[in-house]
Image 1 (tube, rainbow over the protein chains, first blue to last red):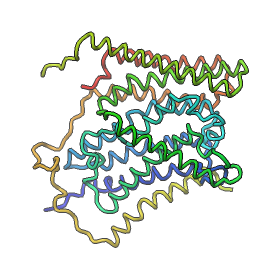
Image 2: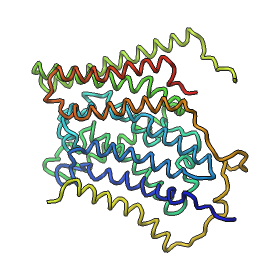
Image 3: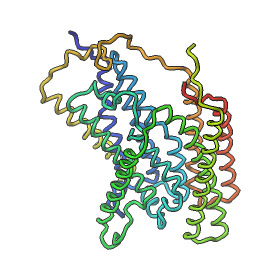
Image 4: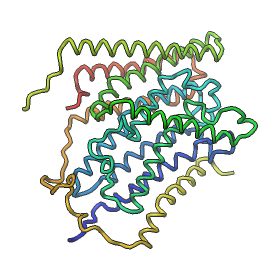
Length: 303
Length: 118
């Protein structure tokens, strides 16, 4: 049998692209106060978002095969998952940038005298779910083909496969670290001013908690198919993120103009978030009731 | 003094090398035994019974277009979000209007059923 080597370069390059993109993110993540970071880029958050949008390309490259259509279909599904919640994720990041007045991670951490998860919990929720979908973590990562094949792994072996697998694991944890930096105050914690190295511990502890929360969610909830993922993106996540961004922008500006202190501003933003969440839940249940009144959705006849 | 982005570029280079090095090492030092099954069409463990081409419905182009609208909108808002603390309430209201316009478009597309999975 003659071994087909068409597109092989593209397939094996996928391992390198995936691994390089997820490692390069760490260049600008602060593990502690000054010094415990490779470089504090002014546009750090944008840099991370740009690198994260390279990862889907590596999935497509990994599944690019002239003879294995299930592998190719699996790659397309994996990409759909990784970008399904990308827009709400960007909008949630905008909320954080707005409140911090900075795109650098160090600036965002320093701006969190009150952690952003307290003042804008809805943005945190959106970013958390988007991160889970991005790394295809269940319950938001139910790929149509087996996950092993979904990113083209049947076409990889040895060191190339290990690079692809390690990239997946690193990406999964990096998302938790970025979440901790954006919403949980990053390396901030008791005694960090006396012993800066403690910051690394606080950050890893927080990221570990986020990772654990994702595992709990996976165990406790039904898993979403790709069509449910896309429907919930356009029908719930995007509108929610849009309303949240507008409301937080207007409320925060109004409170600042009125000269309200940081503590009360956070309380005001929290109340705004709670109100939006209540309205969203009420709307959702109303729609569900209307749907029930119309009867079950009819499956269209075969054409 | 090194430019911060040069440092980030250096880190990227290290990242690429650390990703490629083990694989290249395996290529140079490891035994080369290509699988005889590699050129075959693989279909979930059974013998293949279809062609290898996959068809995509043009319907999904709509998803892509709506995504682009919002992704570009979000990209435009990054400078605005960065300058937010110095902006007047008027400028914030303007940005809210800027977001509301594609929001109405999304509502239209949604009610038309273009975003339904088919």
